[in-house]
Image (tube, rainbow, N blue to C red; front, side, top):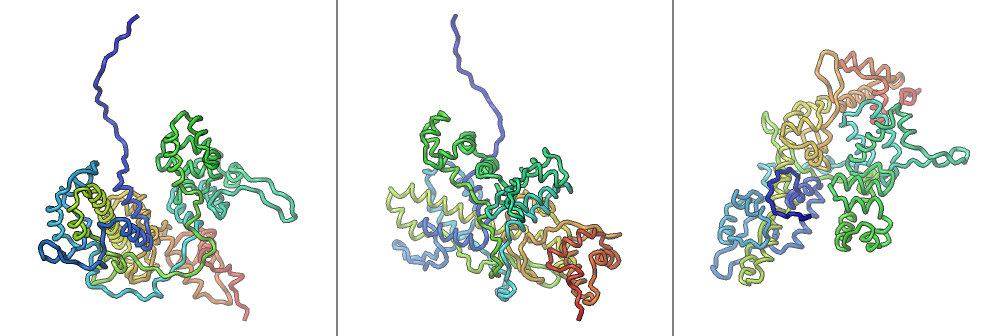
Length: 497
């Protein structure tokens, strides 16, 4: 029996998300705080000789006697240049004459602050680092869980250890007896939630920031991160079954078990080692020291409008070192090196400019929605969620989350982290909803003005909130907010003398 063989051409249309190096760098820079960005820029300056900052003195060209004023590089490029920057061929020649000519037309990264040069007093720039629990509770507050699911999530967050893992060990009882270990089923039963739903809620919490939090072991922590990032099957298989071999550096055993080459194993292990094994690494539960914070943006009232401007103090203005480029171009062997370093510098400058524009754009949207807060204070803070801003600026909610984390804005009402303005809503009788932060402020004011000999009980606060401001709120919610504000119960607030 003969079998025929033939060659065919087939057209296949598929869709997939491709993370280009430029996009990865832009996302990474977007979530960095101001200090982290300064460190990142310093590292790039050390590693890329074509990058220069505004501290470099301009020099004379050898061949023309014309001053190379080295104007600062802007992240905005012409459409043709942007297309060239996206070319995958790193050896593509660059029209240096055209490029250096266009340099003269560009503006520096980090625009001026429209004449507002005075920084706020340092006492207005004080804050304290957020704990992992506070960070997770904020994300939980922004989620749309049902009551039973939220109760289960609170149990999970309450059982995290100092590394960010879910600790279900029983421990030791008051009489020294060993308590049995807890299970997810126990937490689900406590929250009156079905076990199947509990596993789903736990999976969603593990995808909160930081990804991998609330994992029950290292394997689960790494696997969650691998799935979110999009690792391939080989890397996931190593995490599932061969972490002990990775620990012992027994890579040959992994290659034999998975029937792949040693080079593939090495590449996979290198990617796995980039994952975070301690989700709570960047959070502190005990550091309550106040630290000075320099705001990323300013909101300043100018007449009847609020102006948003970025804070470029302390940020180096990056540009291409033209003097060095001219000198290196004399060596034909340096062309490929220059092309690579130039593209790297252009990507960095463009990513920093995009980060700056995104922060300003999001802040302008927040200012538009929270104008009454800027005019009158916390009592006028409006309910707002990530989706509200995301829809207004045309970005994804995850991008808004990155922009608002560890970014600070100085306003006429003081210094705030951008994510402070996101609050859940509480209903009011006959009026529009009010932000939960405004309710907390109202409770604080009422407790401060109460008769210390007859302090207001939680039920009295409920009645007063409804009668004075039309706020409908449950007594247990008042108790929760009071505890969050650090206000004691009425019995402990009462002064006898």
